[in-house]
Amino acid sequence: MMSDFNYGTGKRKNAIARTRIYAGSGQIQVNGKDFTEYFPRKTLQMVVQQPLRLTKKLDSVDVKIRCCGGGVAGQAQAVRHGIARALCELDPELRGVLKKAGFLTRDARKKERKKYGLRGARASFQFSKR
Image 1 (cartoon, rainbow, N blue to C red):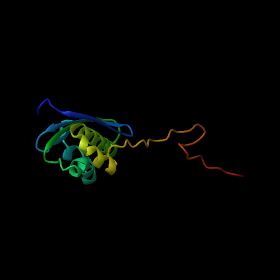
Image 2: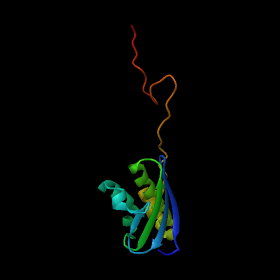
Image 3: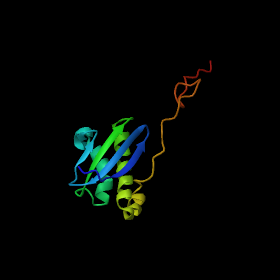
């Protein structure tokens, strides 16, 4: 792969994906593995490819991703966010299409913290009146 690339960082929950896009033939690597090996579920593979399919760049770019933190679903969505940001850097005209699909928006939802005196974030211990 060449040294000329476009960079994008994607985040979701605790997952962070650092994405590099090179001119190439459509190869996607996550942490040194092929993305179909790293994300074995078909739904997660579809999530990773969504921005490339939408912009019709699936066969014209190579994507190299370093992913850490979170679970596999959060990582897949972080990868989608990172690829979308890197595509915007590659071609600013794609921004409108990606923005309309919602791929450039950071999903801010996180796990709510446990509160003291309760069993979980909102779940309480069983209450007995008598």
